[in-house]
Amino acid sequence: MNHWLSPEEWTAVRLSLIVATTAMLASLPLGLAVALLLARGRFWGKSLLDAVVHLPLILPPVVTGYLLLVGFGRRGPIGEFLYDWFGIVLSFRWTGAALACAVMGFPLMVRAIRLSIEAVDRKLEDAAGTLGASPLWVFLVVTLPLCLPGIIAGMILCFAKAMGEFGATITFVSNIPGETQTLPSAIYTFTQVPGGDAGAMRLTLISIVISVAALFLSELMARMVGRRIAVE
Amino acid sequence: MSPVLDIAIRRRLGDFLLDASFTSEGRLTALFGSSGSGKTSLVNVVSGLIRPEAGHVRIEGETLVDTEAGIFLPKHRRRIGYVFQEARLFPHLTVRQNLLFGHWFVPRGTRKPAELDKVLGLLGIGHLLRRRPGALSGGEKQRVAIGRALLAEPRLLLMDEPLAALDEARKAEILPYIERLRDETRIPIVYVSHALAEVARLATTVAIVENGRIAACGPTADILSRPDLAARPRAPEASSLLTAEVIRFDEPFGLAQLKTRAGPLVIARGSLQAGQKLKIRVLASDVMLSLEPPTGISALNVLPGRITEISERTGPGGSTVHLRLICGEALIAARLTAKSAEMLELAPGKAVHAVIKSVSVETP
Image (cartoon, rainbow over all chains, first blue to last red; front, side, top):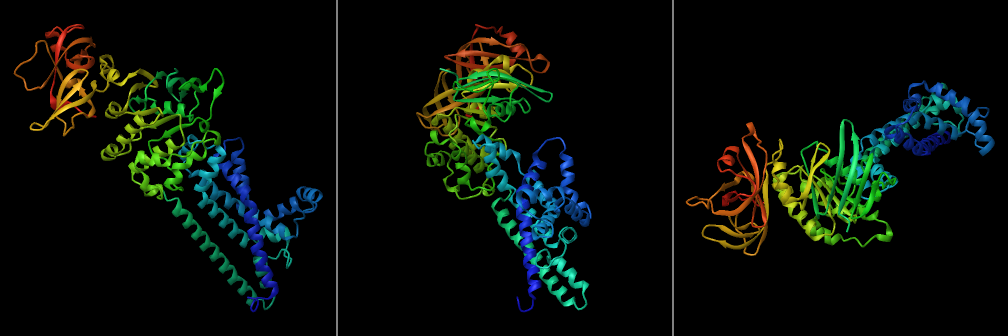
């Protein structure tokens, strides 16, 4: 691959994969919890939570990126706290890119998982309860396996969104080669310089390959899981 | 000795008030009533899926719920095997994993080695172990569901219309297994049904559920033949339930001679072996009464007896009465027109002869 990709381009590809994977894995526990809360919870402010979760889907990505910059920048209230207490810096780092991608992919992930939790037959959970399983065990051995296809779909959606995220990322963490320059940012950079067309095309092809591969993988996993839990 | 079941609960569900109390000593207690009478809600209270507002649930002396004492055992700690109307098998697990699901959750201290082989044999499902629920027939699913409940080492088995979703052939396939459960395991069973034939065949005790209340509760033969219960609007036909032993089988005519507590009976029901025990049921409308021993009639069974009860006039235009007589040591239910009852001057204490056609004796 190194023969036809320059080291900088190769770095952008690798960085994109790392950022997207991190975004997907890091938002999974919270995504699962929020999906569960929205699917099953009955509490005051549920529609408010629902709206907040969906906000990144509706807002212009640049707005989301700017809000992240305000909140998580070194001078931002959350950014300052994270730096003072844990020494974590997000702005202009790849971790910040992962945060931006996670925030943008979060509504897609929550939505997919929530729908699959809502589709789980509560009667099966009741049956598991009468067989001696405590609520936690019921969740682990009945609910979770039954909504696995939805979880996989949610993860893939989040990953795909993260791979393509541009507006929020570039606003929050800028476009620093080797640190925050993901595939879309690199393509954008190529289009801004004379003679960059070939590079932009190479990265575009890679983008397509990764997206199609992710789609195939999710299809394959969904089919494997789906065969196991064929509808009764 | 505490009763097997001691239940007295109250719970409002929307406009419906469940206010049921009864005790039962039976090995298999049937909750019998029409749809919407509250049978399922009642078993859901016993299983812990519904929390009663007031009352108690005790099983063989152990208190599961007592609102006055502040006791409410959550469903996963009740050890009650629940067989639902739709089998509710876990689609992501194999039959074997489904069967052993409850066994994993039995506390280690009290856990016995899984009697998987015994249960497989009892229910005839050994060949299904590797399959998934999606690949089973309705009858197979229901048998696996029963096995799953049994392997959780329950103190009580609840069966909520387990046959309702099955066709006649599948019902006939499962009924013998439920009889074996009743006779061979030590686990008491509560069986919900709106089918009288199932109740007559399986139950040792019947509780009649009506509008969220228990209208009557007692031994099956007594409840099914009671004139006052049969006289209520929309009540099923009363019937006499007898256990019988085949004395001999009359090959040329295909008739079986039976010994029952009501006296000797001849029935026309397939080929039977001498010594075989069976349950027989005679509908009240298939019993004729005569003051003298009748002669020159086709019916082969004439049982002398005495009237014990007569109901009020019921039926269309008050045209019929329900009676119960004691023949030998057994109770026989009969339904006659009010006119016949008046012509024969029937009254409690009067000696009569019950005439039963051999072809109308059923074996539920």
